[in-house]
Image (cartoon, rainbow, N blue to C red):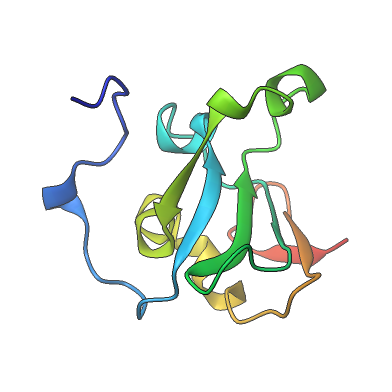
Length: 109
């Protein structure tokens, strides 16, 4: 039984993007419901890994260093929480983007 109260239930998920694999996301996004504030794409851990990692931008170093604050999710799940990420998902490995404050846009950093 899943002990985490994730922000979206399975029946609420729409197919917004084609299957792209999994990603890692902060509990601040998936449980607390904050928008993505920072996203980066690193080298894939395996063939199913999209390489994408998502943070709200409010995580402290201590928070990030606790692996229990991050989970693997299908990339489409995160797109359902914050569709603003969708136009950027084809960026290459090494991409680092932050949200332009107060907008639905991201800029490279």
